[in-house]
Image: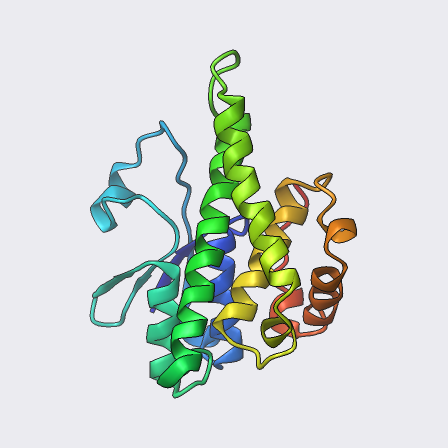
Length: 203
């Protein structure tokens, strides 16, 4: 299998963590790819019109899009338990992950607004609104002990990627001081090899 990725992408990191946990990482070829707003990449657009990372290309050439769908595919392939099979835990995990993915989307948009949009054209209120979505999402998980202390699954993996991306791109945001339970959770997660070795490079 091949996975398009960037070491800076929290979405690609999510899949990498899952692949390590599921014992599949050695079966995946990681193919570096660069995508950025306003920059054409026709080769990558032929793989996915959405031009987003990551994409998994299976051994038979099938293209699987979206980090959650890729994790679900790998989880099924390995017979893993990163995503609950049925019942209330499944819908809770999927809902938590949808919130987490939305938080990551908002953080990425804040990054683009600050670093990519031409000077003088930034929309501060729009950026503030998106940052608030991520920040209040952290507040919600600060008070979710069943997630922070639960089994290692897609929700915990996603939350690790949120916090790691906050450290990577928003190092001065103060999330550790504001959310001590998340800080303790993150420190504990860094003891897992899959989490530790996938930390983004220094910004």
